[in-house]
Image (cartoon, rainbow, N blue to C red):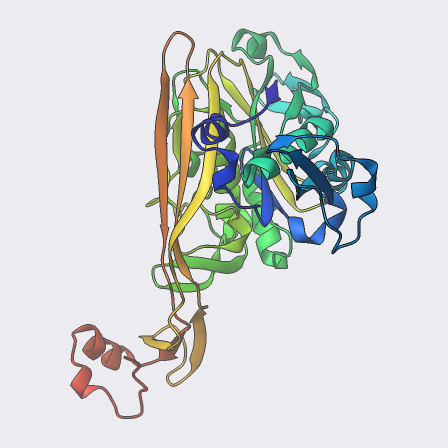
Length: 431
């Protein structure tokens, strides 16, 4: 399967002539939720200046003596010239190969899938599809984008299925025959406890089967989140605070689980973004927070067969959910993110009170975060019908630096009741 130009770019080029555009300062390359931006100014090798001559406003080849003229030489009447930018496709190709395709390209995997007599599914190998960026075509698209003043290029990527052996008649009958979609995310630079929780959480889904036509619930499949299940304490967003609790980092798992079905075009029945923008889930608007049993991720398997999950993390701090099953003829494209409503984080510190720490003790309960809104669009086209366009809106709050102060239960009761005037004088209050 080849992923090529976005329809919106073609429409953009058709509606507006090149003369209305300025040279873009950067080119953003997109492939599903993957985004990479190249600053044009840092690549002077991409362009050169060519002098174009005109005689009586028509392009013409000038006399040889014009080409050796000095700056103040007189040009014969009727002749004019302009200096135009010429783009070097070879240099652009080299940049794309070095900075972009080297990070996306991967060989197709190989996997043997079995099911034991007890019903457990095992995987021998990893069935990641192969990816190969067509750098020559990407360079041509980049050149066209620069000439037309367009700053976004959808990467042409060739995807190839892994080598798969399904050693189970039951799984074959359920439709497990190829990779339908893959969810992936990066959790590099995560604290040790967060990495541990991600690994534990990912393992809960490995081998899970989603029958055709059923609804997948992340929380139900994940199960309880506590110390007994092997989780450690790490930062968790709980209301206005971000404090250590068991399972901190599991939203990395739910985000990974979400991206594959969303990009393929499965019906997303329940999904919520985080209350503030978290760097681990970039690009913003592609995250899915969970907080069992209150906040869940749910989607329906409306493919022709069952979906089987292979979930794992690798040594480069990537998390993957491979969904095996049977593909259909739907065509899905995702567009975004469109960022708006940027709000700087409040500069004033905020203080709240808690009985969970010793009286008078102070602890940080939240960092500053800028606010924004992120919008993605998902276009799904089924054979024989028109495309449907879905808008995925994700609002992220602007948050101040937050501290908590330990108080007695009696003082906490007064504060909760709104008796602020009776608060002991030693308690700092931020407004």
